[in-house]
Image (cartoon, rainbow, N blue to C red):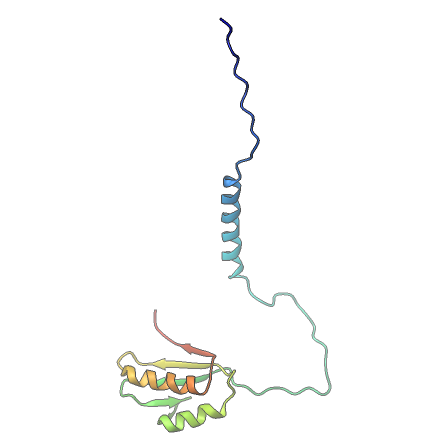
Length: 130
């Protein structure tokens, strides 16, 4: 009886799944640490210009709605018409911060949001507590 000798198994392909797993883990690590890196850490000395204008924009506009439904535009009490008039005078790129009391009516919040939407303000932040 002649015995057939088994040929050793040839590997024509490389298993890349472990390699992909390692690369995905590294990618996740890079992306999570990259969000904590402070922007602008490279020191740059900016050139000077003689004919420059400085924009006088406030950092942010604060709108408050208290538990009684009273609205305040940067600590000045306003009604909805006055609020709309004041918001229409500021730049659309200006940051608006809305602080609404948790006991206030939802309708007051919706009213302020409706005014901001109508005036096409896009830089809106709503402040909440953790």
